[in-house]
Image (cartoon, rainbow, N blue to C red; front, side):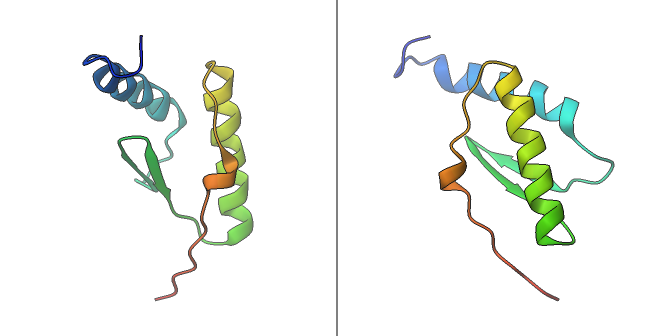
Length: 77
């Protein structure tokens, strides 16, 4: 699919939804919005582990992940 095609966003969302279903855990610890992902974890180590697992999962499907764009935000209640 060519970049800029009207079908590109729709196909991207369909593929990412299928990949996400395979990767999800019991609770909604991640939120997809377009090509962004928000993920939560109890510790930074757990978050990094989950991010790397997701990266490996997505890359095994032939997609690329730019890990340099990741941001970690520590929010304590």
